[in-house]
Length: 436
Ligand code: UGA
Image 1 (cartoon, rainbow, N blue to C red):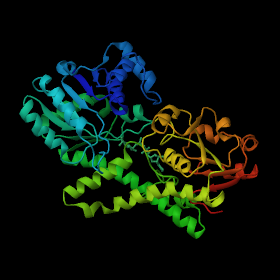
Image 2: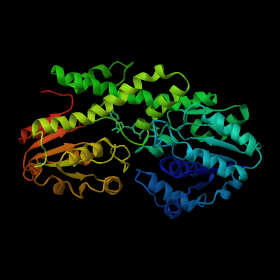
Image 3: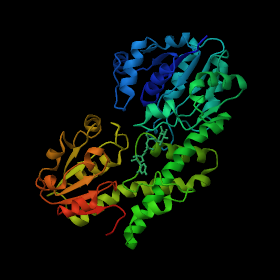
């Protein structure tokens, strides 16, 4: 008999997982405590922007295999329960807030049937899974718990779920592994590497991967700082070192650094957990990774001040991009918005444009000005800051934009625009980490 699945938490991770598992042929119920989210998803509509997921969700809703509810009792029918709730940074420190993970496991415990498997996918501090397994041993001894970290990237969520580059399962026994193999059978059949680990290693794989990615980005941004000081060009440097397969060229895009709901909070939570474990020295370097990352934002502000004036009160600045990366409407810890807000706090008049992120940005920073069109954002601007590399910005015509602005001054915070094109149209261009 085919397994029935439940997915607890229907944000980016959960909604994607639910729709993708349904597309593999499983009956799936998604549960979320937010009635608005559940209502939208039940209509086949996404509460956020994710390319390809909207059509997949709508198609899966039509099959009758996929449903959403706020009622935890709906898990009673399912055999495997994926925990996909958020683990944000705590309000009072660096550690992850585990409230939602703990409360969702507690909420499903009374409904778990004999032999069912709870599978954590959320990013958690090492040791959490064992704690939850112990909790279940008391409240629902008929069920077991495994950990199956998720590596999906926003913007590629469907692709990363259905064709991941690996599957990692943390299990305490063979039976849990067998159940997970049954769930992922179609994905395994594609040749996807399968890694069985113990619970702590599975939890660590996730934070180690994100720490490595954050380190790569901050490494290249540190090189950008040195290039600026020494008269070099970080984009050429990145290209040159990237040809070494031991280094690799991906995630060496210098600019204003990483943001989003994962990398920044994951490295901080990892440091906090290492301290609890007495291994804080091992992760001391992550503090520097965080510092380099935040310094990249400050460097943009320094360039604006150095070029325009220390006192920005008379200047208008157009910010292109609000989301933490393109092809997403996620503005959590967005470097672009942080820079926009800091410039506004320094007295500048700041207008922000983004193809998808204006509404979420407005909710976080209601006092910033927003423009629906690039031409409106740049009108009368003394500087244009390219801070999120949406494709639409690479297609802008610098001559047309040049007729709208007060000063032809561009800062490319992502090193993605064609500098020569803009310079030939009469613009002063500053790209991070490039001195010429
Ligand atoms: C990240 C990881 O890449 C996923 O593998 C992981 O599953 C996910 O976090 C998570 O923990 O859930 P995501 O947050 O979607 O995925 O974004 P990334 O594509 O990793 O980008 C993160 C940030 O780094 C963005 O702000 C991006 O602009 C920046 N970045 C990325 C750079 O500044 N330079 C680069 O070369 C690459």
